[in-house]
Length: 162
Image 1 (cartoon, rainbow, N blue to C red):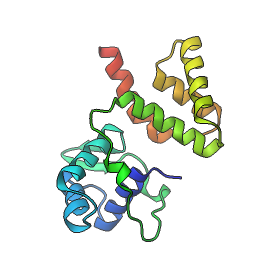
Image 2 (cartoon, one colour):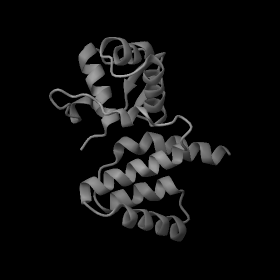
Image 3 (cartoon, helix red, strand yellow):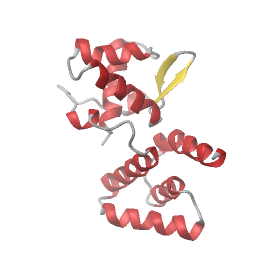
């Protein structure tokens, strides 16, 4: 199943009929036109989507970092409030790993704790960054996590600079 954030992004781009949008073309419909959340919450959602690597900024415009046609928007879709309650100061690393784990679990029907332990084991044995270990485990289980590559890459680059 596609993440709710991806569904929202696909919904907004399909609704606009454009392939690239400004930040305001993303957050204003969420708050003003659709009334799904406040302006501040919708701005936080756009920041969250950028931080998660779901949206990429190029020449001042945002575009999805995944093919829109791969995500199905359910008829009558309305997002749950949980997607907007994510705190912007949540550790990005944990969000990436939790997201990858959730994707592995949803596709393999395995226990979250088992997957987390498997990631920790690979991280230790192979001396990998936690995000890279999570990608490795996903691949090992045959789960397509290509939509996480950009976020993990950012994290790895940040880790190497620090």
